[in-house]
Image 1 (cartoon, helix red, strand yellow):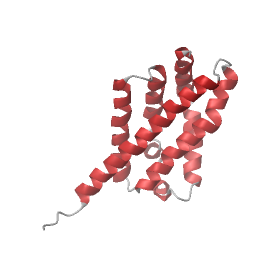
Image 2: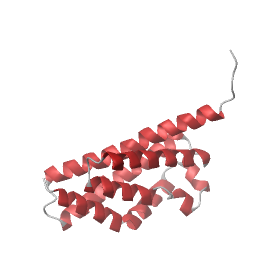
Image 3: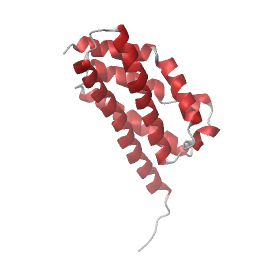
Image 4: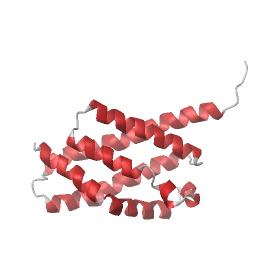
Length: 159
């Protein structure tokens, strides 16, 4: 497998991140199940996406890098905490991350494949697994952070 192709994919996604963010933003705004986004300004809504693309590019360049994966998890926790404080419900964070994965899988991997013929089925499968794992890390770490925030906000009860 050509690791260079995965690295190029990371650069490609970074180069097109503004377009991808625009698609994501429109999808979130149209989604009736993400009502918390209605009260946020553009900058507050897309706060985590540039970091997501930087992390994803790093993972595609070095898929087995523990420090890079740790950075993804750390940034996901920060995002979960941020969304919690913005009034998001947990399921809304999950829906946002699902939209990112959907856009990447349904449009951008195909667009990259048209530009880079060496992006064959085998390499694409590896790329999809890296993206899937990265988004799953967002789900998992955001869930942990939401739970911690809920624990903090619950009144202490004596037994």
